[in-house]
Image 1 (tube, rainbow, N blue to C red):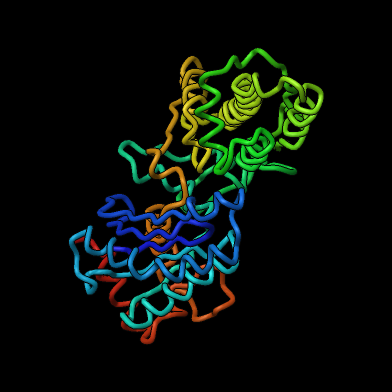
Image 2 (spheres, rainbow, N blue to C red; image 1 turned 45 degrees about the horizontal axis):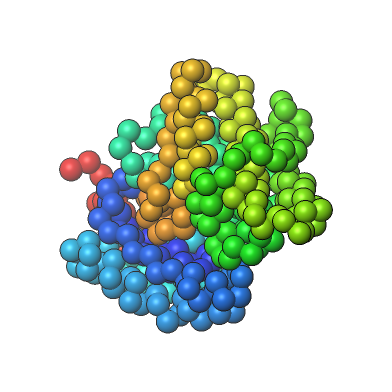
Length: 351
């Protein structure tokens, strides 16, 4: 089954072609970073307008790069949320129109589930069940993953997400946007033990997070040392990053031990952080826990993870009633329900 994935939840316009949920033929991402960095963050109205300008070209590029024909596509998977409503609407509307015109099913995919399934686009994916740390600009969650479509939320941030805290600290230090990547690179030049920022573990046996306190501690440090803090920016960046990584690593390793999982996954944009990857791998090894982290290109928002998740949605619920209120609905955008069901049968049946 060849699935076209479309992702427009924030400021990346992305399209991808994935076969059977695991073979990536093409992934194209058009970033808006150069536009939004002038404002210090994503401007929703601008983001949605840029998606409108880019989406047709991005989808065409993905199809051409995959070296397939448009008629080879069996289904469309599109991000339904969470995300910026205007941005989501662009991708969602395009996917509806594409599926309707081709008379193929359109599958609505939760963006967070897409991130978790991104590890299945890599070689040697984890075996079920496993625990997953999803850490990004908008979310910091831990899940117990039972199947590709069955996730149990174990804990989440009560305030700022880890990536959000990175962006805000970067802004405090005058480093620009996007803060996570800039702060991570700068931290490599600093001493992570120069300044001690608090580690808000909350309840160490549970899995909720809170990063607003660390962010506030950095702000107070800057205010207290306003005459010379600029000479210590690498140390501030490294010490802040160390405090966040300590909490993230402890929580996901503890979750794996509590649930007796021999595998864990780290996904989302912050999973691209070099120090975080190294720390979790090094701490998991003595406990015989295998760590699965997607390639850098699959950590940020991308459409490959959406197409991958769409495939598993089709496998788990191939036939659903034509009810637009259902969260995942394969029929709602198809002109001919019987025809699209037959197409799905042919794709899913053993060759």
